Image 1 (tube, rainbow, N blue to C red):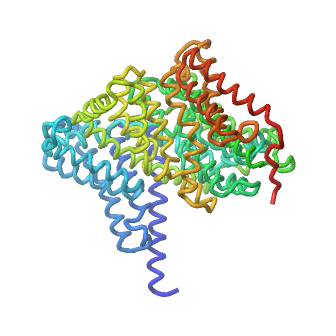
Image 2 (cartoon, one colour):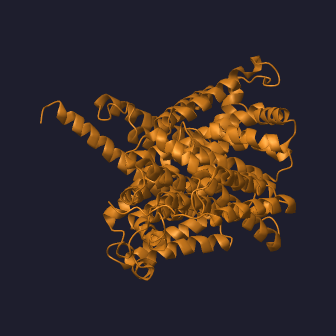
Image 3 (tube, rainbow, N blue to C red):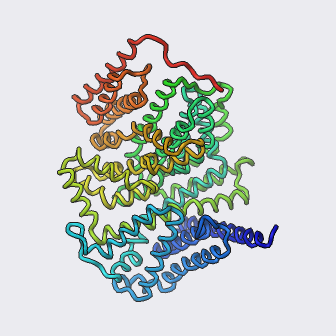
Length: 631
């Protein structure tokens, strides 16, 4: 080893050591403060902010090209210390700080400026440039918006007012996104880390393999099943893709799926995890807090759309497998459900505790703490799942590491919301959407859909939702859509942006595992997700799909929606009972779109179109697609 290599290795070791123990301390602080609930909220938020920034600066070096640089380590350690100085400043003069809102001192302005700069730098490192650019543009609007022409202009604000809003009130950095991240999201991330550390991920994979492996295109359907289950505790499209994709993508390739198709299936299935209750990528907590409804109401409303989304992907994969003749796994490759449950029943208990506590009306904070405790207790029954000291520390560290991207994004989103509230931008955008659509819901929905997809490019689903909730959601509400329906609509398309090119992170993650072309994988994923693009329009026009109505209203709505997405899946692939002719695909597309809007006329014509396409298919003779044999 040369003398030059020694300090570089030492620098990397110091960074790893400091980052690990900071992340462990971070997790311990959050779990303790949430379990005891004995720290003033503002103090808690300030320390949460400090830990988030510090872990980000140590975990993500100043330059990714020189992660072991001694100089960069020194800079990052100084930035980490500066982050804690924010909490110290708030704690040391807390009540004076609280009562100075509206009349900030020069020191308040200084710390406000430093905090915003630190937040922006941490966001650049942990989340990337897209969110940082958006936040910077919004901040510039606060300073210079008065020079824009009406209706975009505002009256103008001085630095004291901006400081008060973004640093000393709960309409900025310490706003709803940070509150929800501290109270709920971090705990669910910790639950996922502990659950995975004990072997819970493999349990999901085994169950999905046993249930779906024998079907046509078995591994692809395994991917759909696992991703839905993982969405229960994760909700991150990229995390789900890289976690389950390492198992499902090679299996799909082995039985005949092209690499880009295998990557696309996994990405599309994993993206839906953000819609799957009870966690929904943590967006459910923000949505409930933002619109002022019980958390369980959001989960209840999202349940049927989530199931329909996965059935839509399931149908697309099924028809694709039929078209190219892909079989399922052999019996010898399939585990038995009874054996899996007997061997791994301990992983069912924490999930049952979580869902039961939520249904009984406990807050998400209490429910996930109980689930976390159940995970630790019940996994201790077996040696291979038990959380020993090394596993425990690893789970604590992973919780801290995995939270920084969401936390940085939430904090920056809080600044954006602060700008919207301070300047009245939400009202201005609402007026713009209403003017462009001429007050027509039919025109407004595609406009909002495009805005959601564009905002979502390069952003986590949670952040995309927060930005859209503050800007475009009010326009839908003004058009008469129920608040919950409007917010689920924008959230749904923010989620689908993860598989919408040119910036589709989940697709790129799937392509990397599949060793496929990223853009080809992205476009294939988008094609497979098209069946899911109908669903938001369906539940806007038919609120029964959000369980807003009687059982006699919900059942027919679910039935017609299911037929619609199956027809769209068959039309996209060009295969139903066998390869479809052009006119048969037209009938299937017509059936899908007619079944969007509720009503006996559209439903009847849509069902007749679907029936006609099926009858034409059944009348055809000749062999269907041959089965592909394993290579």
